Image (cartoon, rainbow, N blue to C red; front, side, top):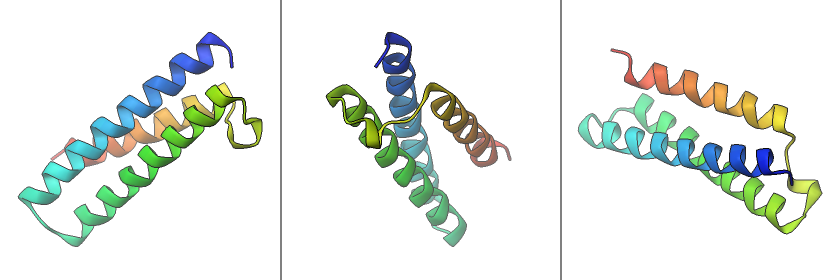
Length: 87
């Protein structure tokens, strides 16, 4: 993994965990089915990002993602974040 891949991987993990926490707090405040689905989506993103980063650091290329896919996933998470935060 290049240093850029490691940096983007850590950004992806951190951002997905932050979004998971925000969606958890939102679900606790308003326990609706829609918020539960958002919470589960961010939980899966956090799991995927952590798994991808660990696989990349261990050299397991079959579980890794290219830099382009990581940036695309960050964009998707940002759009989901806007959907949750925007009132």
